[in-house]
Image 1: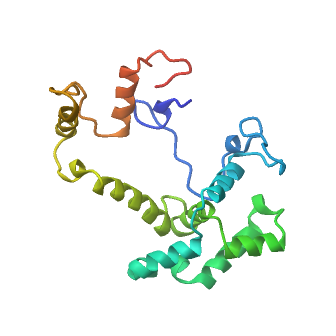
Image 2: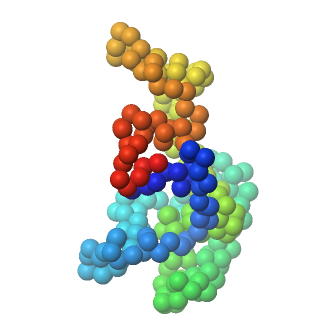
Image 3: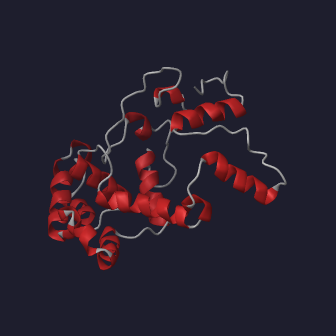
Length: 212
């Protein structure tokens, strides 16, 4: 349940400030009422579920991913000391884990394990905090996101042909219908316009709780 006018300028609203990216969670995401324990560890909160999901998904280790990118594009890795220098990376993680108030319960063994082999989702958050003060993703996080986006674009010939949204929708429609049944979709240029369009077609103007 999201009231979108709190996040984008809709109907002259003033959106909330964004939370900086880092290895922390807001209170609600760690609340045991929203994310109760579900296994024998009795861990609560979204963070445990996220890290457990990452483990079950078989994500690459940070070291292996950096090595694979370095083999293909060494100049990218060399742009970041956190990625290029493993000893530096381990030491930065170790120092932060040892001093961060939220992680005071970690044992020395825990700190060494996490410093030498950090879970990828945790490291992406840490990298953003360490490299950009949490204003945006760091280098490794940006590479992961851009690879997904450009991979999707490369897999769809229409995406590289340019043209307007209306023109691409017309092309898609005519693959399945004799006419352009999507012609009434307006030109959507940003997230706020997409939310407003969704509100209209789904008849959510009077939704409770409020959608806009």
